[in-house]
Amino acid sequence: MARLGVNVDHVATVRQARGTSEPDPVTAAALAELAGAEGITVHLREDRRHIQDRDVELLARTVKTRLNLEMAATDEMVEIALRVKPHCVCLVPEKRQELTTEGGLDVLGNRDLLTRQVGRLVQGGICVSLFVDPDRAQIEAARQVGADYIEIHTGTYCEAAGPVARQLELDKIEAAIQAGHQLGLGVNAGHGLDYRNIAPVLALGGVEEFNIGHSIISRAVLVGLERAVREMVTLVKGG
Ligand SMILES: CC(=O)[C@@H](O)[C@H](O)COP(=O)(O)O
Ligand SMILES: NCC(=O)COP(=O)(O)O
Image 1 (cartoon, helix red, strand yellow):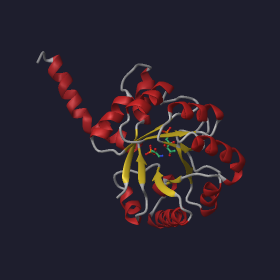
Image 2 (tube, rainbow, N blue to C red):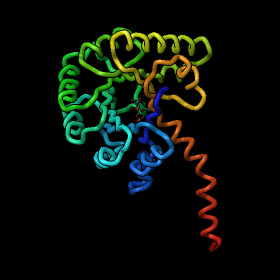
Image 3 (tube, rainbow, N blue to C red):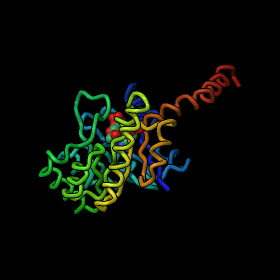
């Protein structure tokens, strides 16, 4: 049975919008684990737009399940990972202007860099995953550069308009899961998954961990709003 890893980046997005200390993604991670999450994911972006270094350091000490640190394959990030020792690092592409990750890593085009950075992380005892599009050539290259896992980018499937396009993307994900297994890689998946679009991907089987963030944090804001308002109404009424 697959595991759920909860990405708490967007708890930090709300905190950073005010520059205060709340809501704290470290507290959110603990609540996610209490609710049954079997992993916590954070993306420490080079521009520090949401998750901060302090979050990663505290999460590395407090997460009781598995901490999956998403990051670019830069020297700065590899040095942070080697110091804080998350259970797993997922190397992802980053562009300064993007709103969120727009695709998988070009492993084929960055073999030398990735071989070096994956090697440093593996030597440091950290399991390494590469965030890739569902593309056999990229998955083979992930194996060649020494990754333990791939995380299949599901964003294109999630955004596909109409059943034909969506089925096409689902077929690519199915082939990618098979390719990963044939090559002896662990297979995770994520990006853009929500309460509706996850079912067909789950039905494919073969995915060890789903990393999901935006849809869970968005839903938490709405399902938690009524209670939060009631608590403030009680205070305002002097209750
Ligand atoms: C790699 C991936 O698919 C996501 O975790 C993404 O990197 C999240 O980044 P944002 O939270 O900044 O959208
Ligand atoms: N790696 C995918 C992830 O961590 C969560 O992505 P999203 O659900 O926030 O799109």
